Length: 98
View 1 (cartoon, helix red, strand yellow):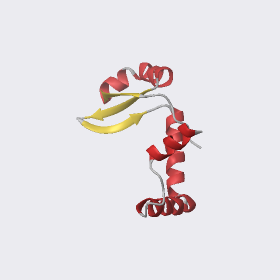
View 2 (spheres, rainbow, N blue to C red):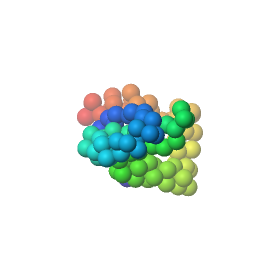
View 3 (spheres, rainbow, N blue to C red):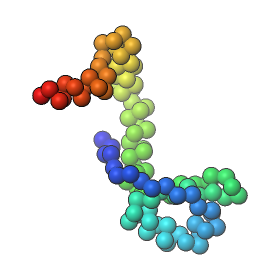
């Protein structure tokens, strides 16, 4: 299961600057949890991100495509629309009472 991480800082950089400073970009991605959006001729062309973040994205995508997960989400949505499921506030209220 994916894990929720710290806040990731995003920056946009021109492809030429990314090429010139690639080693520094890698250091910032690995050591400071930065994610870089790389633009070429003003158009987004690539994203440089931490491998853990990439694997999390793949895992989320796999879970979202899982038939059982889709079925459970549809059932939860149905229950919510019928008023059979609680809201986030309801859950926190229950947890505070314990």
